[in-house]
Length: 245
Image (cartoon, rainbow, N blue to C red):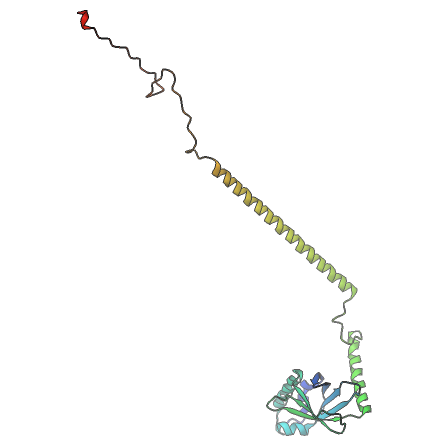
């Protein structure tokens, strides 16, 4: 087994989670040092109670064996950290009696849950720990202009103005595109109506075959068979009467 056990427990350092159990609300913090893994548990409310539990090398030996290699230790710590982050946590023996220890469980539904016994801190120790946490938060906040929750929600007036102008430009561009599209649709519709009207006019116009042919009256004296020729004149044939003999 590695002589530096907790160097493989980095995944469990600086974790924090909220636990809702029955009518209680807890905050739990996980931290790792060179020689132990520590759990702090605080109960939300007017009493301000805190509990603390520690895992030493002896606890690791008991769980994983004395011959566990670094790869196994790291894998085990990673699995515990994942359950911690997912909120797979449970607190046993919750009661108002200060003398009774709590049992903190990570992965209560897992095949091999991890248990840490917690002992309640004296009021002075609890206050000291809470102050230490707030001091750490304040030091980290200095890198983000002393804001507790960072600057992700803070927008300067210059950035806000720039964002507003960008939004206005986007609206104007969209309006212009809509107007162009509308004009194009109107022009297309007008062309379509014009084509329809022209087609209807063409339908109403008679075709050359349907146009009436004017009747040409024959000239006076023209042949009825061929109007372009003059009619032949026929002389009346008279026959002599028998009486003339």
